Length: 457
Ligand SMILES: *[C@@H]1O[C@H](CO)[C@@H](O)[C@H](O)[C@H]1NC(C)=O
Ligand SMILES: *[C@@H]1O[C@H](CO)[C@@H](O)[C@H](O)[C@H]1NC(C)=O
Ligand SMILES: *[C@@H]1O[C@H](CO)[C@@H](O)[C@H](O)[C@H]1NC(C)=O
Ligand SMILES: *[C@@H]1O[C@H](CO)[C@@H](O)[C@H](O)[C@H]1NC(C)=O
Image 1 (cartoon, rainbow, N blue to C red):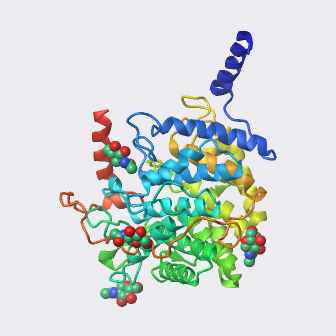
Image 2 (cartoon, protein in one colour; image 1 turned 90 degrees about the horizontal axis):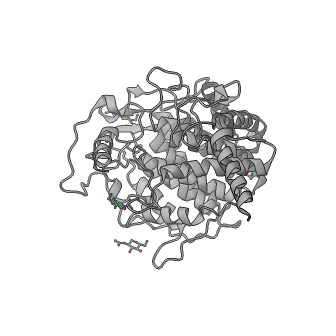
Image 3 (cartoon, rainbow, N blue to C red; image 1 turned 180 degrees about the vertical axis):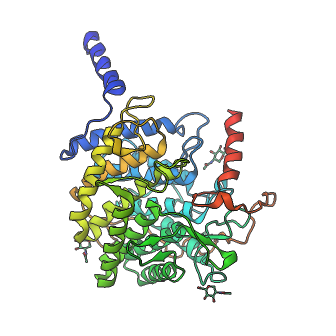
């Protein structure tokens, strides 16, 4: 390349990076994959795992562990939908680094913050890895991804707690964490969806029975309410036997449970599941879309605003709507226009921040609103790439193209019991109501630790 040519190329690249933001033609695969490539480049600004002193499989402060599972799950979808191998090795390394010594995604580093929902979100990433037939690890002694998601499932299911509220998972895994006395929709929703997908993938009835049972419990305890629109409550404390329901409507709760019902519909073909899918889809439209463009209604535009976790929820809803449109084909004509309108507006919001292409929180403005972070990036990535969901085969099953090696017994012998304190010197935290409301991880302790680590840098 001549130096003039080189200089021009640089001017061009810098121009793209600093002036234009992202352009998106929703009818062009090339344009969708180019846009999502830029978004992932910007995601990498938050990832120091490839550098000295960085942690493989974690994003920088203040992003919690669960969000890493969510973001890598989105990048895995991009690997599949755009045939993008750029991050294949990175995804592989992150999975192994965060799987923990027992390959059940309870890494010892996270035991001060990890809840059932956090393990569940990583579990959904691993389930995706299996269904997309991401190559199994070849390292000595590392089990197949299918065995790992079976370990996630088994450890979660062994924590099913019938002592309070007639069943359900608690929010937290460890008794010393804030929120151990709380049961919520997201933790149980993740178990429901993982069980349903394992049932579909393996053809084993046992998983589908669990999914039925978890869903029925959500109904019995009124976390899931057949109103018009359907309400999915955040959760309730075990102290009142889960009778004092809390929290606003969050898009990730609707998304995860919608997708679980879609999987159950796909496997059973039953009218009952079909009706559930249809009703949750209507409620999701009612709560989280305005003029066909998605928003997190409980916090976007509110005085307090959305916290770091909540800013990523639109990615969950986008990914789950896309999956639903594949597994419950009758929803496709309703879902795709919502994703198209949202993707167009989301792309228009990707026009600011340090690179000039960081995405914003408020997609209705169709321009950058000045709020940016990992949550905005992953939400835009998911909604934009979801437009390609029907260009590729449906999630594989063991009988149709899936090849990961499984182990139905994985995790059963080394389950992390919720009543066991794994670290003798772990602090016992007084439970604090205010902190629990509708946040996904044990916030304060994580923040204190995080700030400490931050200050050390
Ligand atoms: C666990 O934390 C330590 C200290 O921050 C870090 O060096 C290590 O890479 C972390 N491991 C994982 C798997 O996150
Ligand atoms: C707690 O709730 C469960 C499920 O609704 C119910 O079966 C059980 O009897 C309740 N226990 C008490 C003590 O009220
Ligand atoms: C299940 O999903 C597949 C893949 O999209 C689809 O072909 C099939 O019709 C679905 N089953 C039902 C009952 O809708
Ligand atoms: C638990 O079982 C797995 C096989 O499912 C085995 O590889 C592992 O060594 C066992 N671990 C313990 C602690 O017994």
